Figure 1 (tube, protein in one colour):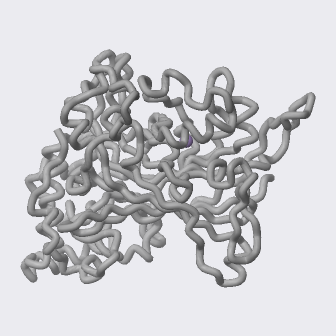
Figure 2: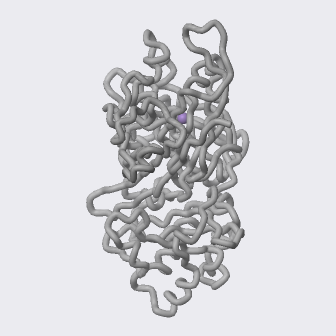
Length: 438
Ligand code: MN
């Protein structure tokens, strides 16, 4: 079942936390994403909800009795989101409804006084990884990305024949998933120039980012029990932004025959706030409209619900600020703007495919979409495509040319959902600065 639209999505709903009502705020009361934070000088990791420029501390709410009667209340007192991700969709929705009661404009003065004590300015907290990620899987769900990259690597055969049947993915590395703001050191690895006889080992020269959407698994499935398409979204908690940093020179040399490995596993950044499926309910759209001539998905990857509402209208942007731009006080420049709904495969299809062999998913597992690239050049989700493997450099306002990432470059990813008649909701940011190898 897809989460439904209810009173918590009403566009005229306002919060007594004034900053949440400002136009352009990523975190109005209709959003309420979850994250994990610790306060300045206080190392205790706690679960919080973003509201305007504040964080609502759920541990403090629970201690004050504000979550009484909710089945999800104990899970709100933990130091990671895994247990909360594992509660049923009904319990999660009940928690959302309670949080709206606490923060809505019509809350009583007494209620506001109590909730006020559990509110912290986001500027005073440090955001941590939202979950203990047991497994991380990265898909390859953009047919535009797959075709562009394929045409560089195999000009005669860009899109392999399995692509329109199999939701292509690989097992990524969970231990190197880091939260937004963590610097990323340029990796070293084996790389081999096309005309060289031998590979050499050294710092990557073709460091790239990949703009992706992360999907945190909610309730898991037992080993041996595939999740059918009709229930797939019951196993999805929410979405975040992902930067799948990629060393292209390492990747090209190592990827055959078993796929990505060290060219990817040195770091993956995630945004700290997880936007729930409930919050995304107003922004559901049909799955990718397959052009004439494309096969329809096999039955185990198809459902009428998925065809009509499997997609999510989510605008995604990438911005860059080089070291020199920072030194000269020049604001970040936008590199691309794409949309999650341009993907060939939906989140439900990723879950159904992943579990179709009986593989078990667990609460807090991270699935990433693969690079989100759209049909036009301005929507390409990585530098490999944007600079066409370095042959079409991007001009920065300083006069610098960007082909691949240089030391000191900061990458900023942003995401937001907009639809007429509903409040805009945002994902915040996923940031990372490249450090020199060493
Ligand atoms: Mn990727």
